[in-house]
Length: 135
Image (cartoon, rainbow, N blue to C red):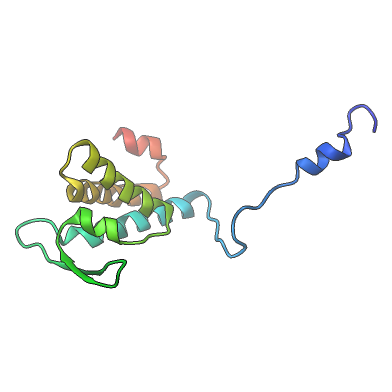
């Protein structure tokens, strides 16, 4: 090989490695932002009805096939399986709230969902996310 050319071994090492499944869908930009907001709001909507004096029970199937009735947002989030990264982040937010404070897991999810719901039309008006965060 000549000066300025990559050695054949180095050229082979620079090929992209695909770790994702071939059926994996990849979004970018505005579409990804709106998809993340939709997934996070879906988690908040699941939990929203468990808060307050008129809260409703949720019926869940646990891992062993038993039926669980609860209105504890943290218990519900422990039992549900999600695959979307933004929804997983919402569940992690709830777990962090529980570890740090020990209470308010449902409230923090609802608050985050509402903040995202307010930010969504602003993103659609092409406001930059950092401008939205600054208020």
